[in-house]
Image (cartoon, rainbow, N blue to C red; front, side):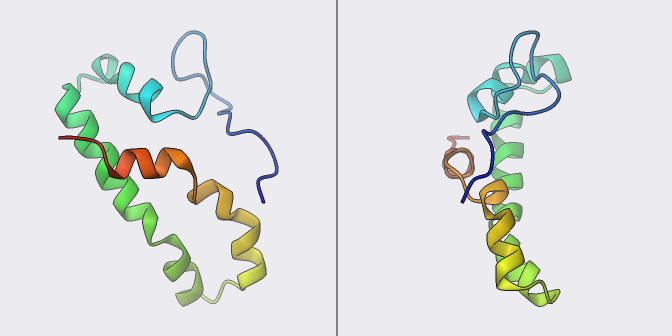
Length: 86
């Protein structure tokens, strides 16, 4: 269950706070990242985040608590980041 839209409290560019991998990649140059570096970083972060539920369980976080925050970790943007070309 998602409680609110995936909008970031800080803007990614001058106009949008949308939580979008495409938007994040579009501003990579501002951070001196080449497109390939930005895609690689996004894939690495996505891979690390993908194991969040196992880590939560290992730390003793209840299934109910995990369900409450699942939408922060399990969403279409994570899938997109995992499959970015390098």
